[in-house]
Image (cartoon, rainbow, N blue to C red):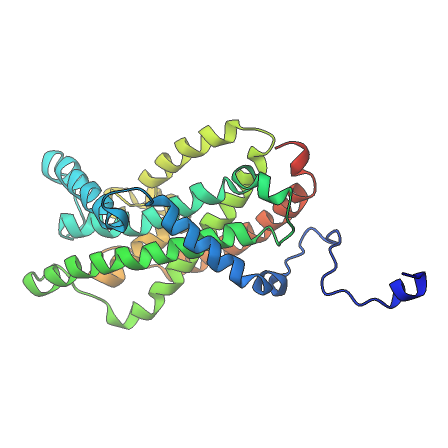
Length: 287
């Protein structure tokens, strides 16, 4: 083919280096929506492949953890659940915490677990962490159905559950905050683990510590006002308390901390994109 014909050739896709560290081509990511759907299906089916109970583990896991927490913290230790029935209190915490922790853990392995694919085929690298968040939403939806059954039982059988119906419309907001926050932290950890595998061990410890600081197993009322203020700066803690307040009428619902959670999450997201784009250029040399 002559040079003239080559210059007139119109290409469907042109792969070139990103011009900016803040480059976030969501249009290109959307063009690969079929790949995202495939990755979501893979994430869901591969976990329960060759298991006897299959997807039932999505329900069994939170049930067992809730029973253990109820026996350990409420029945044995006598810790407060802020007026919420213990089983419902721990089930709410586990349902939303598992979504956050699973998304964080899986996105933190983006570069390492997909290195062989990244080195052979081109596609927007953000497809992988985005697919993790979406598959997490599918699992969360199924676990919320279990939560709804337990919730309705206590709603009709006791007067301890006082839902704030006017705020129900805000529930998706807190799920988005948790999803974007886990995505951002996961991308940052994934970028660091390409060079320093120590962060893999640090993440496991950090997740366990963060759970106890996010009002998953303890209510905010157990802490002093000063400690509450400090802990509520954590977007997961403020979101968790807001969810409990909306569903049961017990907990801390603070517009100030909710706005702070949104701002913190967005700032961390843009920071993670900068790190992701810089790491993407050279990670194949170090992974």
